[in-house]
Image (cartoon, rainbow, N blue to C red; front, top):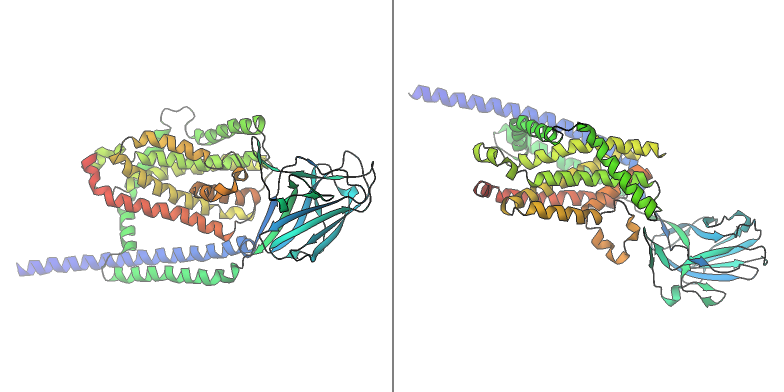
Length: 503
């Protein structure tokens, strides 16, 4: 009996040793792959986003045109006070009116700082301006220093039949109407000594030095060492037969990967069951939605968004993924009640599989998005290589929301009806078919609390503008993804032991 017990104990020890050795090898392989991908991504990000991490360039338009200041004949003069937030002014453009004539003459532009010192001076050849278009005023170098400046524009010559004028306004043009703005007396446009109820129509291009690249590689090194330390710790814990987060994750992935594939496949097939077009709806649905909204918002309402089809479809594709994954995740627990009450598997698999099945549709929907980009004359820049980042952030956000919703659905069944209303409100609170510029500045901080705003904005910048967003955009996307995910995991794990009693 003692010999048999010793033999059994010896067998268990050998089995644990083999299991520990196998786990060590798996952690080793995974760590090598993860570290290689991490280094490659760090180098790729440095190559793509180097300039965006060094400088932030902005171009602001003051107001929509409402009228002209008057006939800029010889001696005509106007003065406009304006503020610059960034550290350098690169260029200033004014919107001119030429009355359909080929005018000649010269305008003198002087920019003074708050102390009255001349910061820049230039002359404008009147024959070069075009009607109702911005003309960039040439001046040598740049103007350094944030603060208040005063622009003075004087007509050196010009007669009653040979002059131009400049537009001014007092409202911001939105998609449907104009939003009137109020200005302090000292900020209003001064024309020949008299104040006008408005300001000049100007475009001011500025640059702010970020210096983020000075800390980029040290930060990458610290994060890399932290990641390496995590894998080293997991390796030695596995060697001793102890468990940890990495060991549990690998064990769970191996044990339930077949079930996960089956659940994802089932959800994907169920969506298109008995459908004539089948998977083709993944391409057709966003295109039809874009077509309807494009007709409405570009024909019936005024719209000045460049490449509106690409702008619109980007928002539609991302919001549709969120809407579909969250709606499926909402019923992921209650819809699998028969499995949960009879077979034990980690319950988190059910909402996770719903989001992953929706991600398949999302990836298919990206194909018509790229087709629209190419058909509208856009071309993909190297910044498009950053596309996996907003997609991954959106995926993590959707998982977090699905975990919260699936938990609420178990205890509050009316959530399935309430969520439909909330998603509709969420859609209109997200800049899908309208520009964010129509939102009043006093509401922008509240508006930017919408996580989808950051994901959609990030994706539009890298696809439409062809550049990398500023470092702050990366941090906001990460925060908008990770915080809901952690909250969702906490709520789900806290309540999952009560699910069986309420199904």
